[in-house]
Image (cartoon, rainbow, N blue to C red; front, side, top):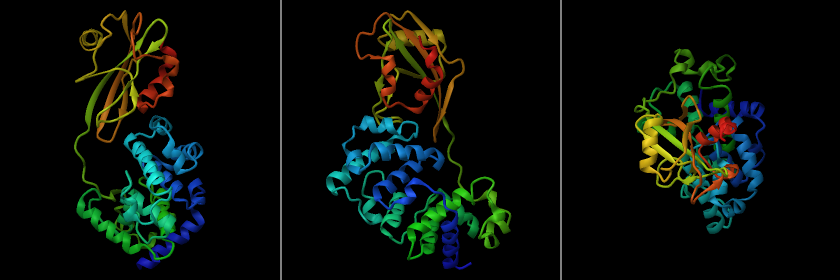
Length: 351
């Protein structure tokens, strides 16, 4: 199949089979940018409510720029990778204050904005400004590697460079944005990671992976290093008037600028005796009345490079001296999904 034919078939398929998604009815760069950043984190079904929430809460880039970062993080809560939410806010401020609310119209210029990488820049430039440039995401890697039978690792420089050149050769000079969306949509609906719809695929006759029975092994990735395990012992201080304490995370680690309960990290989850000793030595809760484990089984939160095992303990105190917040108000603070999940499942046990 010639390259022009490949593009034509996918565009024809897209014209009749694309989903009706809220960002498909516009070419406004602000909304396309929002959708692309959100969909880097999650599937369309889960990301759509977040897009609609941001669209309603911050209808223009000026509204997002004027928002408090804490409010943006709270709106983003549950999507993970909170550095992207912070970059979202920084980009809005940059566009609003230094570009008069107008996003740059080329992929090269767009990449100068905080948190906008080659893929997102290419998607915005092609969809909104008709720039003939390929947007290469996971769906594109999968579709191209299978159709052309390419077994180069997509997470190493040689493979990344090869696929970017191939993808660029396939982009038509007209309807580049629709073509990029067609590849993404095709990868999401037909050429899926598992159980692809090969029998109904409009390009199956020329698919190298289907002919060679290698669909399940492509795209190829080099296995990454082992997952790190971390053990979090969260302390939920609670005094007689139901006040507790939250702490804002700082530094460059995970969940920066999000709020959490006081934390003791250890080499393993601590039992009552070991935790009691650590609380007395490392916190100002040394005169606690009791420690009560809330969750019987550890809560496991899986991130890309680490798995977190967490226990939550109520620390009963007569009174919190300072830095306290009423427990009924903790939901107002942006928190990691691990703590959001805990509160959702165990709130009624916190007394």
